[in-house]
Image (tube, rainbow, N blue to C red; front, side, top):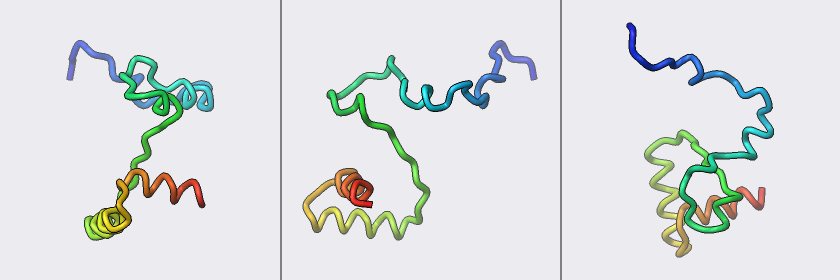
Length: 75
């Protein structure tokens, strides 16, 4: 397979992981100042659990993201 792109760097580990995490992607568009201090977290859950989380957030009158941020902050 000979394509014009070199994919060796795709899975390489950064030399300084702590700095790499803090830098983020400066080229990405920002919605507001809070995004500068935010990071996306991906968690695999079952569809049933996702539904329960969405219902709980709806019943509390908050977004799923806000509810989970509060939960993580407490824990």
